[in-house]
Length: 108
Ligand SMILES: [Zn+2]
Image 1 (cartoon, helix red, strand yellow):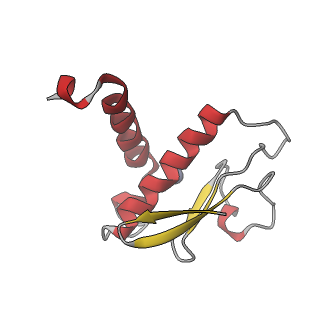
Image 2 (cartoon, rainbow, N blue to C red; image 1 turned 30 degrees about the horizontal axis):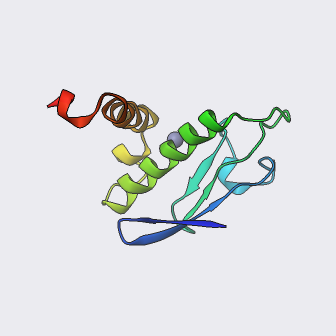
């Protein structure tokens, strides 16, 4: 099991073959992954619920998305606040990937 430090909190990254319907974090959600902010577990499954293998690039996007949820939460945002906003999380992920691709110096 991989571990990642997010603002001085240790998160475990689990990579099951696929999400389970009984997973309590996936109730009322159609997400492909999740971050449990209480137990500090990020779950990035290898396959969709239909059994289709996720590409490594897609799994990296999922991981970045869930890490941003954790970063926002650990910086004081509760899920009802901006940290829980899927749009904000995706915007931050897009900006960070843009900076990574173009290089910081071109953005400043
Ligand atoms: Zn999300």
